[in-house]
Amino acid sequence: MDEIASLLEPQIPALRRYAWALLRDHEAADDLVQDTLERAISRWSQRRREGDLRAWLFTIQRNLFLNGVRQRKTRGTQVGEEALNDIQAPGASPESQAGLHDILVGLDVLSEEQRSLLLLVGVEDLSYEQAAQALGIPLGTVMSRLSRARARLRDFMEHGPSTVLRRVK
Image (cartoon, rainbow, N blue to C red):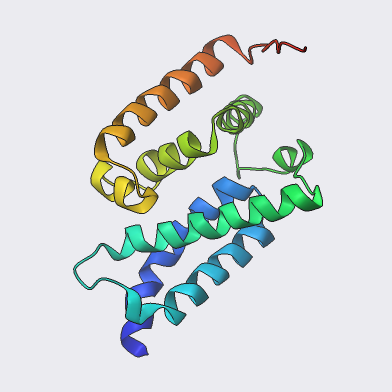
């Protein structure tokens, strides 16, 4: 058990960052990390020894997050815009706070697949191969989704939210 703890402990900060970026709630993020670690420990024997531990943990965490999203949809619970207002960076100027708020809102504009990929590659510094493994998608899909996510986020930051008209029949 000490071996497992020594391998998992260095991964906790990255898991916490990713969980917070997905949920934007410190308590919910901590719960997600705890659930991720519990799942990893309980299924340790199923882990591929030659596989990337970090990618495996992110896969578990993302799957747990998606399960939670599905459960919240059936219950109707949503995190509102007010969660973004509670973000305070120590010593940050109001301009940088506004920029952070815009980036977080911009991330919400992205699809879950694009957001997860952008966070794994851009924030957690996973290679494209590791991200492909974590998300269970081909390498080419990683590159195209990442390109579209970056372009969409860039467009959002430059032009603001675009109004999408839906056709109603």
